[in-house]
Image (cartoon, rainbow, N blue to C red; front, top):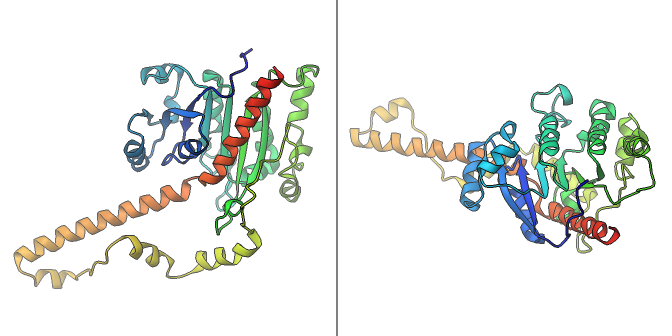
Length: 327
């Protein structure tokens, strides 16, 4: 059994599927956490991480994460793991193959959790995770956490709840070592309670939507900022307008990339030789900017909302403090 950790001791964090580092930026807001290693496979995102966090090592592939590989980059202590695992296997915008999707990395996440044995973990994903495979996939996630001795709180937060003008709902799971909780309850009974489908709305999608903020293990509602003025009902119309606006892509591009008048082959051939060379060079630079812009938009689109993540870290700090107090 792992000894209770000191809640105000700086927590050593392993950041998986790091993207452009949103999770790490979020815990810098709250304080008390230190990322000791990133894991990110996308080369553009790696460049962003190296730019902003040059002192933090990056392991490129989640399949390469082991105790030994972490030690090789100087990481010998991990208190917690944070991750926004790929969402396409669960998103309502895709085929929702869940466990059958090769992009599902929950298996790798639990492998790492088992090997590294941190005191806590935070997982972020799309709300479709709850209803994937009629709720069975989410139940299996809770089951695996329970088998490894973790209590899990989970809930759905929207970007509009922290002042944004769009929904961007995401599910957040906070898993903490449960050695100090419910000592008088049998292990088998605790696992059964934690993975009871009634706690996640059974297998019915409508019920899952209705009960997604109810008790899944030992759920306590995530705190909300009193200054938040976000309202999903007011922003839905704006979301729909932006998503269907025919000129949105051009507007986004023109805001960040200089305009470039593309010439036909005949027009290029009519230019003096020096001008042809200059034109080709300028066009190549323009195309490079557009590719970078596309990568930037994709990275931002996959990023978490920092203010939401900051709330989760604050909740985690409260849980750790309570564990210390009860131990």
